[in-house]
Length: 193
Image (cartoon, rainbow, N blue to C red; front, top):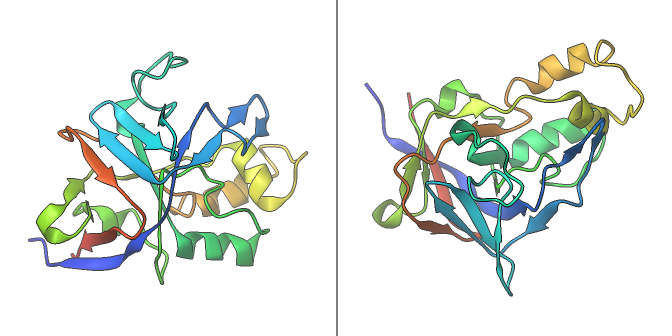
């Protein structure tokens, strides 16, 4: 039986990917664009940058989309996870993992804790996203995080395993979401076990 909703924090940053961050063996930050509004749709997120709407590269209608993976439509990260990265590895910009939403949090949140879903927005005007899975930390991202740009996949195996605890963030589908706008300051809650 699921428990009550527990607020973990609020949205502190919203961003979209103009194109994929991984460029061969390199992990790039320039495809990311911070936005003032993130519009969630069944096809994926779209961001408003103050002048125009930009389709995220994970959206099914992105011009460069070759395959749409609905289970990865939305990504969420937490500030405590970045603090963990900064303590263990090296300073990277908040949001460098490419998460669409960065949520303030006091503690690292596990995949199991997200099993009851994530509520975005105040209770009276919110959406529920579920089926969150750990975002796989690729070799290129792990090189960025560790500051070891030439390290092999073998040399990074232990660090990648550490990041697989959800430190890298989470991905989830947007099933059943017709249209919902998220803005900075929106509260985010998870259902207590």
